[in-house]
Length: 151
Image (cartoon, rainbow, N blue to C red; front, side, top):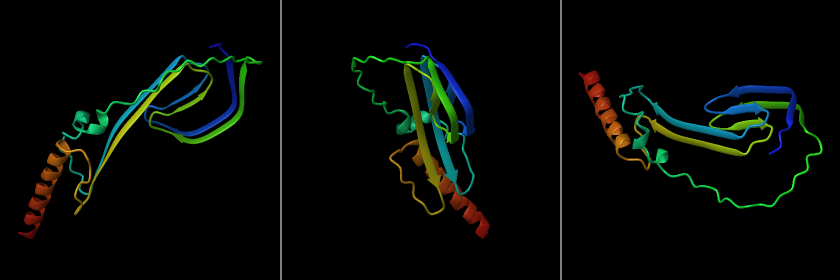
């Protein structure tokens, strides 16, 4: 990879978060990893055991790897300059890249588990184990609160 100069006249970026990157210029390797456990409950009760990522299948499944193929390619960059006038981006999140320049490899991974536990809902998720235990505990607590309220 031949180095080139990256020039951006104007960049507007409103939001950059959660293991994301905005880079102007060349790089060799970019590695971005995000693991998120998003739990929404009607009653904000958390037991301190929810953060164990290994209890949820989505965080343990292997990521399929691309097939590496040799491609015979000849590139002739007539100017040693990557020139951009204006870029406007609303937001970039969850292991994403905004990049003006050259790079050899990008390894980006975002694993997100959403759990919604609302009154009257039965959990619909393939994950069992910890989530089932938490749901049972939440139901028992809700019953106790309702019993106390009727007394």
